[in-house]
Every structure is written in structure tokens, then in C-alpha cells.
Length: 350
Image (cartoon, rainbow, N blue to C red; front, side):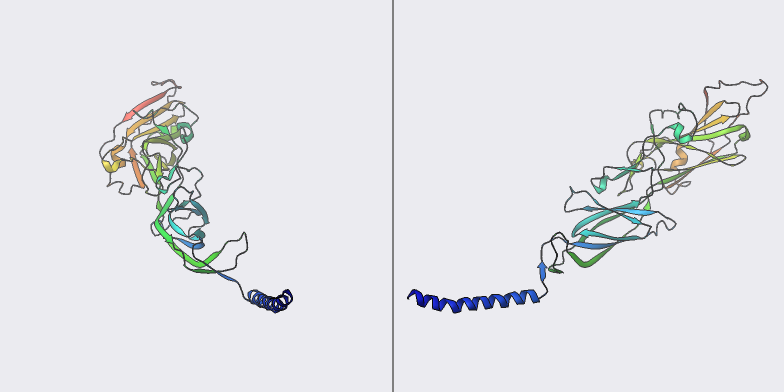
């Protein structure tokens, strides 16, 4: 075919191609763009509910929730802080999760081994007898055989809850509006999970009844040995080992002292019938500046399941603490002011 004839035939084809291109462009610009996503991970609303049926009177300032990704065990947990006690809505990517929650109004409590949910552990820093008793002495004596125990700061009240596992499934296919670069597609479905908080902390109450000569005493304090150093947030199991905690007494009336403090618990291996010996030390400062302390083996009371059926509420009762009268007019035997006078007490059966 001659070149002139070839050019004559190509012109109509070129015009037809331009027309088709224009028509196609018009169709694309006039239609709302939609996309189908089959494998892209999506963010999903998860409604977290807290059911306080086990602790109806609890009023935490707010709750921290940590979600552990079971599909990526090496990743850090995703944390959300939810004000109040009822829960709230969080945003998670599709996947499988386990969760742990606890109240965040706990300035004394620290956390360690947070990489996995099973090792997530609450504890407090080391303290001293002097700090815990609020007595201006750093050399307060310890209970029999307990000199090597660390002293820890008393924890705050702590509630904990766990969710054993749930899965946010891919909605396949998911249709979503066109997303500009740098933005994230959000699916339009949501999930609900419920968690039931319970105690992770034990309250210890020490009552000292029928205290003689209390009007001559300026200050009382105490320490209790063989307590748990920590608690695991998922299992609520006590940490291994033992520590002591010190505390101050309040005067309830003319002959009664009382102390209430929080502890992580006692005897981490109690289920294996391995028990610790618990010594209560009571410190008394008399008006004549003499210093007295009393060692009392309270193991039986701490472990008495009739007296203390609830492991989160331990009560210890002491009677007839032999507080002497201060020495006056140079009469009587006066101990050295700088030393602590020790008295060991065996509790009678009651």
C-alpha cells in the first residue's frame, strides 16, 4: 500500500481511539471509587466492659488494659488507659489477643517482666523499718530469724482482671471508601469483651487488745515477716520468696491499738504445704525514752482458715501486751535508753 493511502486510513483510527479514551475517562471520573481489600489488616473498635460483681464497692480512678498479640509474641503489648470503672472503646488491629487489666491509681506499685502476660508482675520498691513505722530510728530490731528479709513498701489497693483470649477476624472482603495516602482504612464492625476484676492485694489487720499503761507510751509501731514480695497479674499467684513490711499503729481507745495495711499476700507455696513462719514485732516508745519491742509468733493465726477464710483479708489479734510503766523517782530497774529491750511472747490459746 502506498504511503499516502496508509496515512489516509490511520487518521480515522486515531480519531476513534481518542473518542474511546475520552469516554473511558468520563466514566472513571463520574463514578465513586470503591476498593475491595482481602488481606490488608484493619483497625476495629473493641468495647471493653468491666463487670465488678466480685468487687461491687470498688471505685478505681481508672483502668489500664494491655492487649498481647498472640500472633506476634515478640511485640510489645498495646496499652489503653480507660478513666473510671466501667471501661471504654479501644481500637485494635485484626488478630488474636489476650488481655490483662488493673487500676492505674497505684503510685506505690511498680511492674516488671512485662514482655509476656504470664510474667507480668506487680511489686514495690525496697523500704526500711524506720520508713514503714515512721519512727526516727534506723536500727530497729527484727523478729527472730528474720534479719535477712528485705523490707518493702506497702502496695496500694490493686484490682486485676484478665481475658483468656479473643480473635478479631478479617471481614473478607471488606469494602471501604477510597483512602488517601497516609490515612488508614477502618472497618465498620466492632467487638465486645467483658472482664471481671478481683483483688490482687491482701489487707492485713493487726489488733492489740487490753494494752496496759498505754497512756505512758508516746508511739507504737510494728513489722510482720514472711510476706510475699509481689503478685503476678494474670494468675494472681504470689511471687517467690518472702519479705517483711513495717507499719504504724493507731490508738483506737485507751487500751486498744490497730494497724491496717496492704500486702501482696503470704506463703507463695502454701498449696504445696510449704509454710513460712510469721513473726509480728511490736515497737513501743515510753515517755521516759526507753524502747521496748515484742516478738510474737503469729503463724497459726495467719494460716488459720477458720479465723481467716479469705486469703485477701488477714486478721491478727494480740492480747495483754506487757507494756511497763515508765521509771519515775529513780525507782525500779531502768533499761539503757539507747538500747531496745526485747520480750518474746507466746500467745495463749483462745
